[in-house]
Length: 120
Length: 106
Image (cartoon, rainbow over all chains, first blue to last red):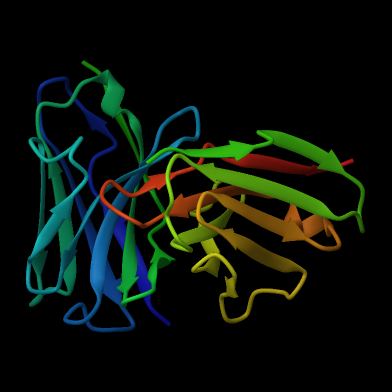
C-alpha cells in the first residue's frame, strides 16, 4: 500500500519561503506523477501543480511565478517550495499521487496534510 | 473553468437518496472526478471520469453527466457518509474544484 508522509514547518514568516517534503513508501516514486494541493481555512481546495518522476512540471498559472516542485528519486521523495508567502497562503497543504492516462487524471493516494500558517 | 457545486450543504435521513450537482462554465466532456473528505482527513477519490466508481467504493455512490452538467448520487445515505464532497475537473489547466457540499445526517 502506497503511503505519503509529509514534513515541514507549520509556521512561516511573511515574505519567506514555504518548504514541504513528501516521502513516498510502499512504492517507487519513479513512476506516476506527484501533486500538491492546498485547502484554505474556508475549505476551498486549490490545485498547485504536479510533476513527473523525471522532474517535468506543470503548475497552476496562479502559482507559476512562486512555486517550485522537485523530486529526489534517491530518497523516494518530492518537495514544494513556495516563495514570498503572505497570510493568503495560510492553508493545509497536501501532497498526492496523480494517475494520468488519456482519460484519467486522479489523485488516488494523499499525504496526511500539513497546516501552514503564515504569520510573523 | 469554474465548477459551481450545489447545494453547499444538506441534511438527510439515513436511507435517503442524496443528489449533488456540479455545473462547469464550459464543456469539459466527462473529465470530472468526485472526492469525499471526512473531518480532519485528506480527500478520497470516489468517482473518476464522471461515472467510473473507484475500486473498493460502495455501489451506493454513483456519478453521471457530461458536457457542463454533472451529478453525484448516494442512493441510500449511511451514517458513515457524513462528509464534504467535491467535484474536480481536469479538462484543462488550471485544474479546479467545486466549492464542496457538506452532507449531514438528519
